Amino acid sequence: MRIIAEHLSWEVAGRAVVDDVSLDVAPGETVGLIGPNGSGKSSLLRCLAGLRTPAAGTVRYDGEPIRGWSARRVARRVAFVEQVADTDGDLRVVDVVGLGRTPFGDRWRGPGAHDRAVVDAALARLGLTALRDRAWKALSGGERQRAHIARALAQQPYAILLDEPTNHLDVKHQLELLALLAGTDQTVLVALHDLSLAARHCDRLLLLHGGRLVAAGPPKDVLTPELLAQVFEVDAETGPDALGHLAVSYRGPLTPRSPATDPSPPPSTTPSTNKDC
Ligand SMILES: Nc1ncnc2c1ncn2[C@@H]1O[C@H](COP(=O)(O)OP(=O)(O)OP(=O)(O)O)[C@@H](O)[C@H]1O
Image (cartoon, rainbow, N blue to C red):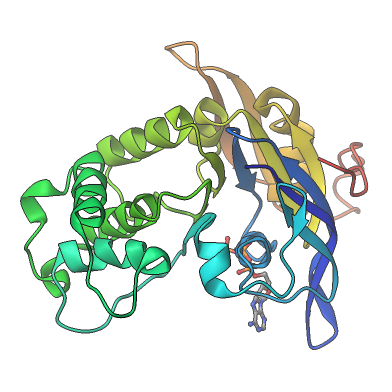
């Protein structure tokens, strides 16, 4: 499924948190959303998932504007894995993953054999089969995160939006998750803080800064030392790691320098203004 945003803005108290963002994520693409803390990644994802009503602009799924769609209609197409997602009640893991079938449910009947098979397959893909009947409250942070991703897969969506899905995961599960996302036919838009993981697993990266989309393209074109300095305020280089994967190496944070002691000019790259990405 293609996800398009056109001149999307979302405001809080008159301040644009998402500022005139246009993007186009093609069917089956895996796109990484990167940017510093507070740059608007979560807010943009929430707009794209229909959970925020934009102040301006349009979100389209396969060409259809989603404004006014019910949550159920959106959820039949797109699954959203939020950054902090909790689940109340005395549920087992299988029940939480089963919530992914809610958009397809019948109020009068419980889940059928097909629903149960889809849930079991999602549990297996996230390595959670052994925890199937464990109480949700007894799970570790990373296990909960994997269960929420399994819930999203159980939704059988055409597209998955994920907000920092690796933040509680150990390195093995980070690599497994990103390989899973990169390997799926579904459209994936994933917010990530680990730029090297984003470079390795995403077809394209979208770079947000102050709510605006300032760069988009293949990882090697977005993760330039100039943009990393300007947007993330780090002194960094990009190049192949020991295995030949594109990776970012950091000398450290850039610290503001006094003009009196250091006359060197600021980085010359000016982020491009928003463009269709
Ligand atoms: N409901 C809200 N009310 C007020 N301010 C908000 C709200 N939602 C987001 N913001 C502000 O908008 C800005 C962008 O927040 P957002 O969570 O989208 O950033 P982010 O890029 O996902 O950050 P992080 O990397 O820290 O998760 C922040 O300054 C945040 O405080």
